[in-house]
Length: 236
Image (cartoon, rainbow, N blue to C red; front, side, top):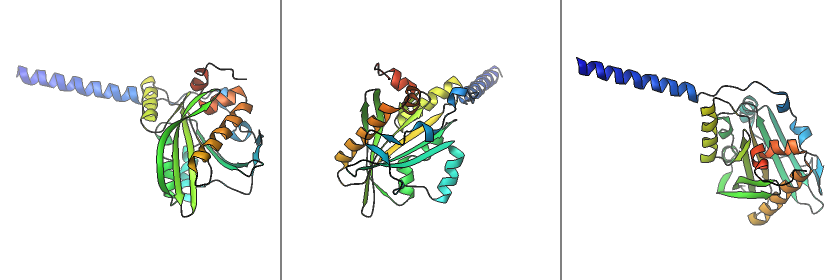
């Protein structure tokens, strides 16, 4: 009888501990703050360096079913194509969600492009160097028939840029332990062409020139305030 009673106590304590852990890991939404209100359309300049918007080319867009899902996940999205005098084009897509838990992993480019019929030819990790900090990125190559599209993207969760995958899950777990739901942003740039090394150089230069003309607050939002602060460089 004493043994059964002891086992019952142990099981009860274990169940209580599991319940408490579940509650602790369940994020709680932040109260909206005024400084978090912004517009992607206004935040991202239409012209910078030798780049300007090319309205004749539209970045890859989701099908109606995916679009409906995106509207539930994200508060804002932006899709533009830029061109320079040399005829180089860069497609820029940004998606922002004010309350992100697992949602950002649902519409990663690896998923989006494959759903549109592309084959994912290459996947890898990299670092995009900027004067405001090094941005951890994913590098992809997607192909559909004759269209070969090298892609660079990164995610911000809360105040830090991160790669999709293990880093993203660890960031989300950290916020779960703090009882806070972070906001999140996915930034994607891509170009068309067979030479992926040259494509990534164009993409890196495009991002660097865009960041250089953005307001410090907007730049920190795009890269994650923690990424910018950790750079130890001027933000002017």
